Image (spheres, rainbow, N blue to C red):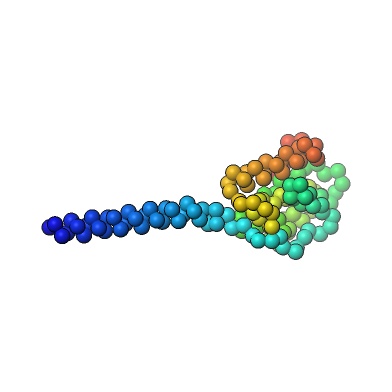
Length: 145
């Protein structure tokens, strides 16, 4: 009976150590596991006209029709960047629908410096939104995220 308890205690300790080790690994690898940031911005670009905003960094893809005052703040998903082909196709479809597109890049994605974190990506999105309001003077009611 004593030997059985020792085996159980030893197995419990091994399990606890393995569990703590797994937790430590997950915590230290969280950014790499959650955010699949790309290395360098690809070569693809939207059809002209489009504008690169270096301060954000972001792209503006204007609507085909002049005087369009509706803006889409296009926040791309994980595992891509603003130059991924599906995103460029979305910008161009939105342009054809008569809306302007602002597509910001996140820190750590597309060659932008920094490490992606949830808080950082939120800050990047808020900066892009503020750019539309403060620099482009777009009314908040005319911005769709």
